[in-house]
Length: 556
Image (cartoon, rainbow, N blue to C red; front, side, top):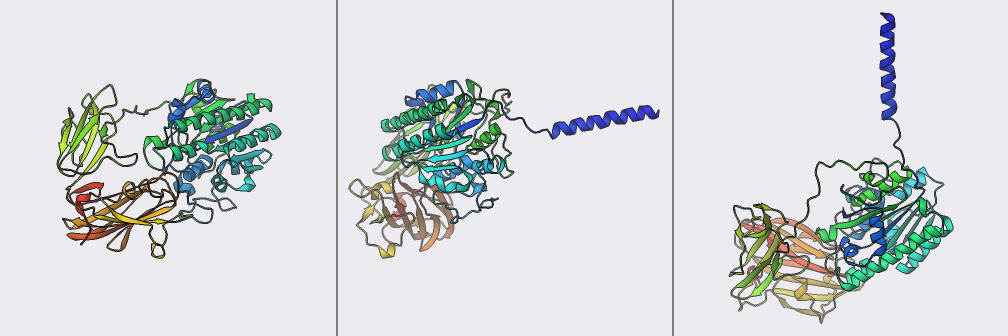
C-alpha cells in the first residue's frame, strides 16, 4: 500500500514538474533570422502600391507575407504613428498624440519611462537585451529623430532627402552588417500634400520609393547577409486629397509586408495588424522580451513553422458606399451651400450589386425607415441625406452623408472674415496684434470661401464671425474639424480648442444657449500643405450638421 501511494505521488510530482517546465519554457525564436531591416514610407497607402508600378514591392508581396489592411492609430498623423510603430503601443500609452509633441513639452505623459524619461522603443530593447547588436536609424524627416533616445542606437543619420537617406542606409548596411536597421523615407508624403493622394505625381513618388527599396535590399546582398535578413515594409498613414489625420479608410489603412528570412512565401495575412504590432514582430524575430507596457502582438502566422491563427471573427469585405452628388470635398459631406429655390440630389452606386436606400434627416437608413433611390429628386430647404447600399435587405456599406444648405437668393452673406498673413505659425496667433490683409463676407464658416485662389494658402490665419439663431433653448454642442488648428467661441467664451499643427482633426465642446441670436467666432490657421475647416453644431431637435447659412446673420 505504501509503495502504491509513493508511486502515485511520484507520478503526480513528475506531472507537476512537466507542466511547470512547459509553462515556463521560453518561446522559441524563429530560425534563420540574424538581421532585420524595417523600411517605413511616409504617406504610402495601399492604393499607391496597387496602382503604381512597384515591381519590388509586388515581388516581396508574392514571395513573402502581406496585408493591405493594416491599421494606423488615431490621429492618422506622422508623429503618433511613427511613435506607435517603434514603441509597440498606442497614443494612450506613449503619449505622442500629435505632431506638436516634444520630449519635454506634451500633454499626456507616457505610462512608463526609461531612465531617460521616454517610453521604451524597439531600439531600447536592443540596447538593454542585446547590447552587442549593431543598431541604426536613418531617416528622411528630422521629426522622426526626436521619437527615440540617441543613446539607444549606434548609427543615427538625418538624411535630409530620400536619395541621401537611401545612400546612407545602403552604406551603413554594407559597412556594418547591422542586426537592426530602421529606414524612414518621406518623399511620398510630400507628394500627397503638394499634389494630392491618388494623383499621377503621387503614384510616381511611390514608384521611386519602390526603386529605393530595391537599392536597400540589394545592399544586403552585396553585404552577404541577404539570406539571413528579414524585411518589414510599412507606412505611418495613407491620405485623402491633400492631407491626412482623419478617420477615413484612405487615411487609416496601411500596407504591411514581411519578406525574407524566416517568412512564409505567398502568405496572405488575414489576422488583424495594427501599427503597434510592428515593433513586437521585430522583437519576436530577434528573441527580445517585450515590456508589459507594450500592447502590440507579433504577426506570428507569417513565420515559417507557425500555424495561421484560427479567426472567429473575420474582416468584413468593404462595399463602397453610395456617391451623393454634388460632391463637396474630401473631408466634409457631399452637398454644399446653395443660393437657390431648390437643389437636385443625385446618387450613384459604385458597386455592381445592391441598391441604394436613403433617408432625409438624421436617421441611419434601415429597411423600415428608408426609401429606394430611383432617380434625381429635389430639396427645397436645408436638410441632411443619409444613404447606404443594401443587399438581401441588409445594409452592407458604410453610410454616405450629404449636407444641403439652401439659402434665399436675396440673403446677404452672413459671415464676416479676416485673413492674416503669419510666418512660422504652429498655433493660433494673437490676432489683437495683427492687421488683416483681406476681409469680407462669406456664406459659411469655410476655408474654401475665405482662402480663394488669389489669396495666400499657407502661413495664414483666418477669423470668422457671425450670429447663430437658436430657435429652441437647450444644450448645444459645437465642433471644429480642421487642418491645422482652430478654436470656436460663443458669446466670447471659448467652447472648442482644436489648436496646434495637426492633420484633419475634430474637437468639440458644449454649452447651454437661450432662444435668440448668439455670436459665434471661429479662429483657424494653416501652416503649410493641405488644409481644411468645417464647423458643425447639434442641439435639441437639431442633428449634428454643418452650421447652415440660413441660420446665420450679420447682426444680432
